[in-house]
Image (cartoon, helix red, strand yellow):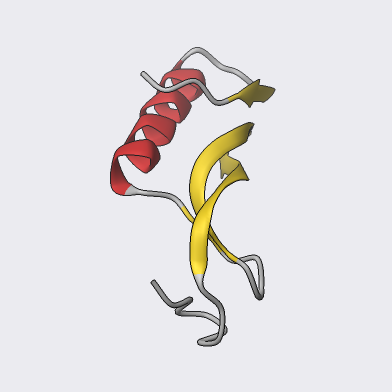
Length: 75
């Protein structure tokens, strides 16, 4: 796959740090599986992983988490 941002790099397997902010909640997920551009570093998370992150974020917002930093664990 070619990078849609820089148009020059190839995208390969890697990991990303994903930060989600909603209202007063900030969540940071480390070591998220992603495709990463070798040229510009743009990160792409697949749909299933994104859905898991959003579900986790939704639960955190509901219980009133303010700030949390986690290492990603696949469901």
